[in-house]
Length: 142
Image (cartoon, rainbow, N blue to C red; front, side, top):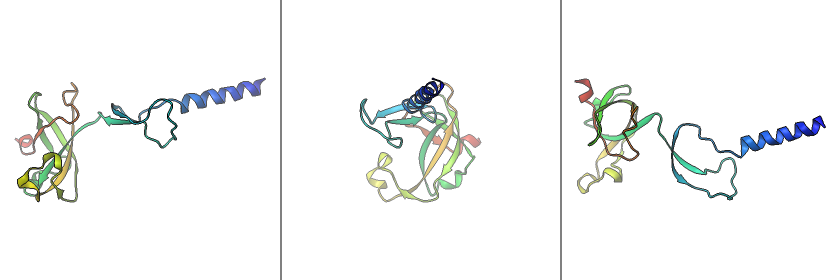
């Protein structure tokens, strides 16, 4: 009887751990990739989750602006509707790339830029996914 109870406890534990989806960090579900009843394995993505903590902003800078950007440097991040926030540079791409389509114009098709990511403290959750921002690297030093 104890052996059967132990086997049941093991199965209940496996069901509890293996039948629930858990995100590794806090975020917002952006897309559901699988439907209920679909067969999946442990490596199959089921949801696309956008991480919200820590919040970060991605910008591209030209080579002439690159001198103002160093990891750990502060920058002023503003939008049209939120008060200015301070961001901290966490990543500067070591390689130049062509201007991404999201910020591309006819005149800038051949311009090379560097990707920069800033971590932003946003306790009021004012910034939204995909929201355009203005980043002033020199403004934070003033």
